[in-house]
Image (cartoon, rainbow, N blue to C red):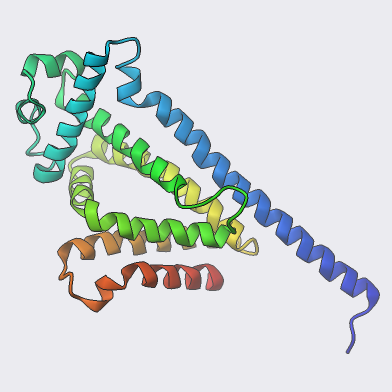
Length: 245
């Protein structure tokens, strides 16, 4: 049966509206992550604490946060002490506590600095105005896996920290929230037909998938075919999640 002129017109109109909706959702995703990134840039401890300070002071702050990241990744929050971080940074404990008087303030600053780096890394995965929403999403989840080959130990310690108490869980939730918002908008853009509930289910599945990959990539063995093909596999599985949600 040949569609009538009105039916064909309505179909074309529906397709145009779907394309417009996809563009709108992509724009929301990009705006959400860019807005948060701009906030994070201003909230970076290296910016906030170093604002108006000498180059030497700013360099000291950077050294402290890099040292804290290294100690945290190696020893976890339980094995991190101000003394260990000061020794790693090559400074006196008094110099460290002048900027970060407590272990909590140091961990908070270290994580906010790490998050800003992580969010900025997302932006290198796509070109604004050129990539399709699904392509952006697939590039991002592939980035998660590729990044995990080097950073899985940090995430092990991050999850351990999250399990140490409600305050720690709240801190980690805040770290993940902007990334979750970014993925939420990309999923909506990649498949505008999904309901809000279906989008949230897809986001949870994608996060569970990529966090699981981080775990098993770190455990190895590296020679496992499944681990070797993880970047390709997560793209295919994510695509199926979006298309069948």
